[in-house]
Amino acid sequence: PRAWTLKSRPKGMPTADNFALVDQPSATLEDNQIRVANRFLSVDPYMRGRMNDVKSYVPPFALGEPMQGGAIGEVIESRAADVPVGTKVQHMMGWRDEAVLSASQAQKLPSMDVPDEAFLGQFGMPGMTAYFGLLDVAEAKAGETVFVSAAAGAVGSTVVQIAKAKGMTVIGSAGGADKCDWVKSLGADDVIDYKAGDVVQALAKAAPDGIDVYFDNVGGDHLDAALLACRMHARFAICGMIDIYNEGQPQALKYLAKVIGARVTIKGFLVGDHMARVADFYADMGQWLKDGTLKREETIFDGLEKAPDAFLGLFTGANKGKMLVRV
Ligand code: NDP
Image (cartoon, rainbow, N blue to C red; front, side):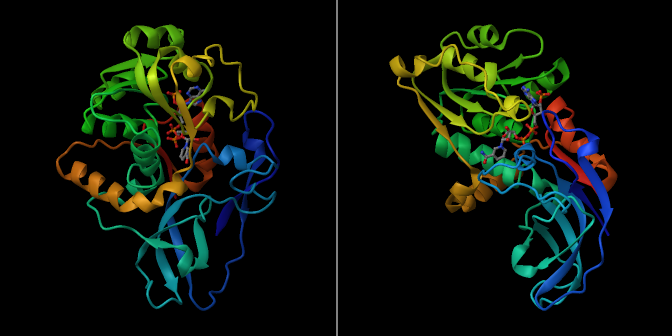
């Protein structure tokens, strides 16, 4: 088996040189362990943070060790009675073609009528992030106007669709005309191509009456645009700030003081804090799936060798929907 390791810690945008694909000895199974042939690996923006040697909500990747991340695969050898050979599971030992782990570290895939890889995207962690962030953190309600950045990504494209399903007006932003057309096809009322001009002005024009909710995936100018556009008692769910994951230095926010007069609530969140509501997530998503409300998209890089390229593609916008690697 082979695994991707972090060879050196990137400064700024990572390069191929920061990663090394290494052969791993094949481990013998102990009691209650399973061997999983990974089929799909997730690459996610938060992994950039794990490449820095700093204390954060997830520990840094260790140099020279296989990296971790979401993965879906099939059990090919088992010493755990309740997880027999052939079981499809999800676990966190990604970035490799084969994983040996204890059965308790793997979850069987929920039974829903979607392809397995959807559980790494819209029906998995990114989808939950969209659902909890929009409905629980921002407390978005029918009739309100929502602005969401990185709207063509895994989280953002699901935010757009949940917001429409719940009767909200949605403005998305994405890079490039093709992505903007796609976001529109998901139901967004308006889409801003942030690469085509100033996002602050574009949002002011798209939402002349302001926004009630901002779902932030980007930070930077997008956050400033949302501040300028916010209505009274607006709520901001701060999900991510991909704009600064490589640079590390946030830019100054020109319109931050608007939070005072407009009584804005700005809340950061982590998806893992909201698992008490996961049954509601599956119930709603299952219903929307059945009635055809949801569209799902994945951008798939083929081959374990391509994992770093897929990961780096998150920062250049190479993905529509969820970015995945097929092993
Ligand atoms: P995406 O599928 O959205 O991929 C990232 C996208 O971000 C790219 O496709 C690109 O789209 C856009 N992007 C990259 N760099 C920039 C930039 N400098 N300015 C504007 N847009 C940029 O990833 P995810 O859906 O997995 O994650 C979205 C966000 O949610 C991230 O910030 C992530 O960290 C966060 N997150 C937070 C979680 C939490 O618990 N708080 C959980 C999961 C995700 P484009 O072509 O449009 O630029």
